[in-house]
Length: 293
Length: 187
Image (tube, rainbow over all chains, first blue to last red; front, side, top):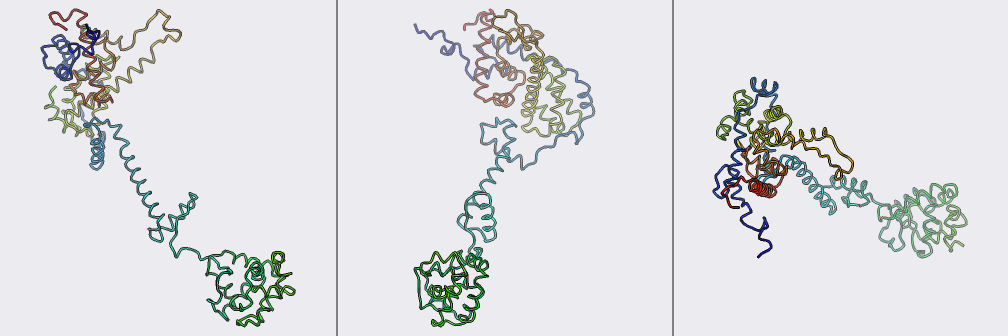
């Protein structure tokens, strides 16, 4: 004796197959289920009564019809296509209108997210047009800590500081360089010379070479040039004499013999001119340079 | 109810013509009323009118022909019924303290409404079903809806509807058997 013989879910006599249920519920007679068929027929007869009397509002609607303004307009065809696309993904059209209602916003948000991701990827590889690349980089840098590449011509050219490893011989400037050095004023340059003078002391450097280095602000990316300008401004009181000295001696000439008078840029000049101008122009620089002493 | 009649008048009803609306009402209102009565609505006639006042302005949005119209109409009817039952449920007296130890019982609103059924036999048998089983069976019989349409109207999956109708029929058969209504039938 099987203990599960009396289980409704195991005994096939006690279950109702889906096909049998469909036949019963759709009004067909099923010989094996006469009692259920009789009951369901009685239930169905409840719906065969005449229609109830409508209330006043519905009576007015049934007598007068509905104007176009009272009717809810049918959805646009494009929206219908979207909705049908959504319902196509679900099981056999059994999609409630609530499920469909958020399908369009969801698709729009997914599409916009995808477009944004594409733009960011293109911007990260500098593939966008210059204007767009600059705009995207600005936005990303403002919103996030990330830095996106910018178009090449959009880079502000950083100022050049004379690095000791650079060969000044490559930039042989004469008068122009001297003129620039005058503009940049001596004390700042003197300070720079003090900083660099320890390791790179090249007596053969001409004034023009040094000055051209200083004047060529776009040569490398060192940001010390503005600092030197600032220093030149702040040390104006003490550097006035050195400027005048250099203007008289170092302008327009790359004569190495005159390097001593171009004290700010040349370490030697710093040392030689320390008594007169270099040390006075930037007091903070002098302790850094042991050569000054 | 013949779907052919509904198919014929549906375009005119969607245009708001009075005669078509009347035809739709005559075809669907008796079954909507029976559904609401069977499920225990407090004022089934008024609720039937409310259902069609909601359905008619939305006729232009209905797709799927007569089947779509029936599905939408019974979806609205079910929503109105749920609102009505909730409204009445809030008015029922409650027994907040230790209900298991309190001998008093309060009949539910659905049970109370079932007492007003025209057929005592139908009322007694439907009372043994759960609310979901009752919904599924009544919508399938009175609304003439398919499993898919019932699932859409109730917001359930097709598998859940099939399971509910199967269990409902088994419960009905068991009740018929115990009541002696199945003479000559071997279960």
